[in-house]
Length: 178
Image (tube, rainbow, N blue to C red; front, top):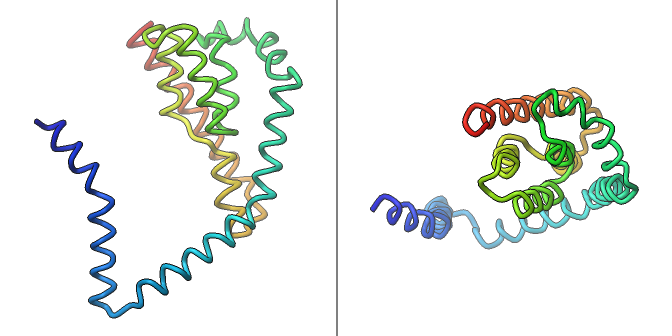
């Protein structure tokens, strides 16, 4: 019953919010259509402004993966990773997650297909996906859209949060499934 209610709420939440905004705009005598067109125009300009940042980030990620640097780094660190309880197979996910959400999702999907969703690696990949964020992607999009140039502290804190999420994922998965 609860699942049915949640499914209906999920289905209707966005249309209801849309009509609430329209109604509030009408009550406040805001020219809603013109405001929407103005906002869409600003959104398009923002999207065009951040394209160079996205291209630079995606090229760097692709070069890192295609060059074999990721595999080499994984092989070199495998003994150390084993001491930490992080399977070497999951290391590329830990490295890629702060860089790109779609690349990390691709790696997680491959790990789950290869090792199975109920394996330790599959569960660890799932928890890591939910416990970490795409720090560089977020910084590129948000800071690039508003023109922030000095963000070294935000990078450090974002990476610290990702490391915390990774450690938490390891601890939780070893405690629950290890």
